[in-house]
Image (cartoon, rainbow, N blue to C red; front, side):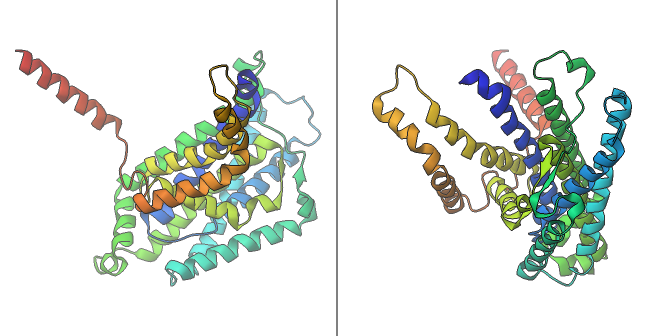
Length: 343
């Protein structure tokens, strides 16, 4: 069981976790740090996915295997960037008319936007309409992995986690800058922020645009991971799943968004895999329990969310952020104190 999971199914889940991290961290910029409530993140993801997939197919059409690794790589980067740009423009379009809206009203507008995007895609035959867009080229293999039996999967994973790290760095730097402090000021009290001279309209629209661009890039990675796209993948349920990830991990925390994305993407699949777990030391009742876990996985998933919200309404981590420098400083202080006691 183990080798099959690691080489195929398990690595696929890890790739999905990477994409979920990018989506959750990017949404944190709007919902967690600016205090807006967007329900249309799947729409931005869809735009990025379809535009980048269409661009890649168009640029690679008829070339076969004639193109070299570098030129193919450049085409992928261009296609993903165009997809992200298209999503950013969509974020700008949504952000401007939504300036006067807050809370539930903004959520309804963004929810409607996401559904409009999905319905528009379903009516574009060029990208497959409701049947889905197939034949999307997958990621080019890195040359240094070309001899590996897992080159395709590892190549996809490297692209996805490279971008996940980039997303975390971008959002972290924004939050730690004066720009990010303005976003947080708007979240805490928009009227007071405006009285202090902060251009709230500019910052809110900018947060929407940047977050949409990052979601669009993640959508492009999703398209090239599976080689096909179906419009129903990007319905409002997908947007709600991303929101649940950041609420579960902690609103206003990049670390919390990562935790939520990893746990809530991996948990249902882990419960499904438990059905096939057998060992000589296991009693029969345990084996029987594991057998029913796939059917019960969504009940367990929902129960976990309910318990978390009852016990930790601010999310598992709240607004806590993991800091490597703080950890190193703490270890150094502990070591110094220990040496002083010995002396």
